[in-house]
Every structure is written in C-alpha cells, then in structure tokens.
Image 1 (cartoon, rainbow, N blue to C red):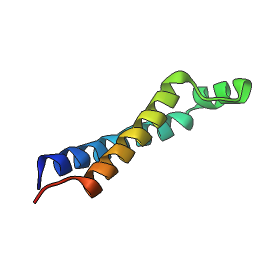
Image 2: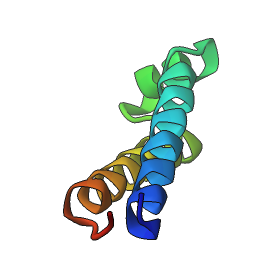
Image 3: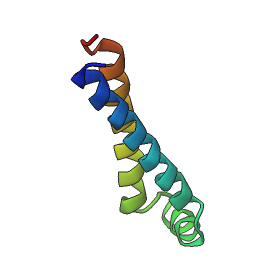
Image 4: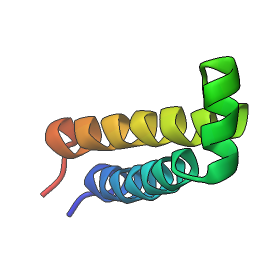
Length: 69
C-alpha cells in the first residue's frame, strides 16, 4: 500500500470518528435544547460534523485516486 492510500485510509477512519462524535453530540439534551431555541446546532457540533465529512471525503478521494502498489 502506498503512502497516499495509507493517508487516505487514516483520513477515512478519522472522518468516521469525528462524524460519530458529532452525531452523538446532536443527540444530547443540551444540543437538542440549543437547536430547538436557535434552529441550529452549536459551533462545536458543527465543527465535528463538517470536519468529519471533509476528512472522510478527502480520504476517499485519496484511496480511489492515490498512486501506490
């Protein structure tokens, strides 16, 4: 496995972990209350969700397009 594909795999796993924590955060009572009052999630939760999605997307691209043996 080439270095590019290894980095892609790490980013995919990291993205999955961040998305998991972001999803768990959206289910908390505090986050439900904030979302109910303001109509949006807190900045911390959004960082988890956006960062996780971005890391997973970049990781997937690196896995698919990465050069390696």
